[in-house]
Image (cartoon, rainbow, N blue to C red; front, side, top):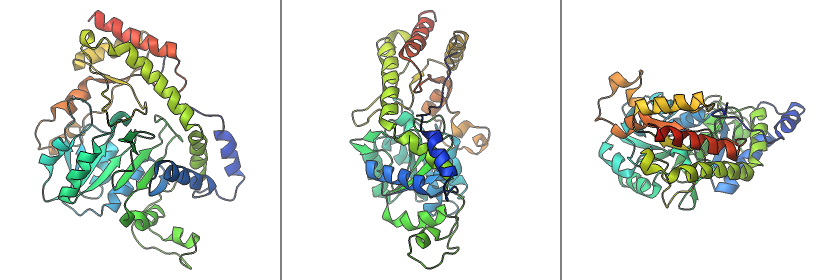
Amino acid sequence: MIVFNKPYCSGRELKYIEEVSHSMTMSGNGDFTKKCHAFFEQKYGFRKCLLTTSGTDALEMCAMLCDLQPGDEVIIPSYTFVSTALAFLREKANVVFADSSAESPNITAEIIEPLITPRTKVIAVVHYAGIACDMDAIMALADKHNLLVVEDAAHAIDSCYKGRPLGSIGHLAAFSFHETKNISCGEGGMLVVNDERFVRRSEIIWEKGTNRAEFYRGMVNKYGWCDLGSSFLPSEFNAAFLWAQLEQLDDIQNKRKHIWEIYDHALRGHVDETKMQLPVLPDYATNNAHMYYIVCQSLDYRTRLMQYLKDNGVQSTFHYIPLHSSKYYAEHFKGAPLVNADRYGDCLVRLPLYYELTGDEARKVAQLILEFAQNN
């Protein structure tokens, strides 16, 4: 079986974890945490980075920093993972679901603008598959209406918009290091703060609502409870595992891009005959090869294609059920139909893509898709 995902270990993870086990700091914010923070701040120009126990935690910190009040509105894409919505709902905000564009699961400024009301406080964008939304247009819209922008960059490590790293453009951003992501520590995430207004409070929230970080830097002579917060800080074992991955970032990315390009080369020339939609890479965006997806003609076609792949030893998967139509939220949704989000929910298929996938295996997957299309 060609599995959908296989977490990758660079070879140094256990060595670094052993170092932590012999150290004086296992609970977090030790040397490996600091190395990871410095890596992201120096390589990508992020103003402030804080590792978290998950991408969900990073989004929850974003929502807390936005200082939302009950009834405030947050615009998010419906076609996203539930964490994007949960973070803001927990702050008692109202989520306003936006449709995706016809070309990709991303949202656009043109889709967002009609949804803005006097209650809107935040736009949360998701860079689906690591491919950038048009951030200049979205930031201009946010500036026009005095809104905050949160980048859900869970898919987007090492990807850029017009040369600017994703996660560095919005006021706040959240990354994921779940085992399905390009860079992983099993389960982990990171908050990025790009706006100076939120730097001090982010550390307080990160440290359970205390100013402990300032105490350790010698800025105060004791620390205490200052604000709301939680235990968002991951253990040093997570950071050690992540650091081993970051040391191999370029190698991991190059291999993933190679696999992505094999899929694209094999399938791109057959779009007309297969009637499948393939990923769109705008001129302003780079490709970090987080995933390769295809969009089928219908739910029935997708179901039969995925079964055909499974019967031939390939594990594929669909992605999100649009949040506006989910069991939890459907009865609350009062907006206009979100036709593109529904279409991606019914028709999108993710193909296997991971470091140890071979070129021959990727070509086999592509060939099976073409065989199925020819007979259906």
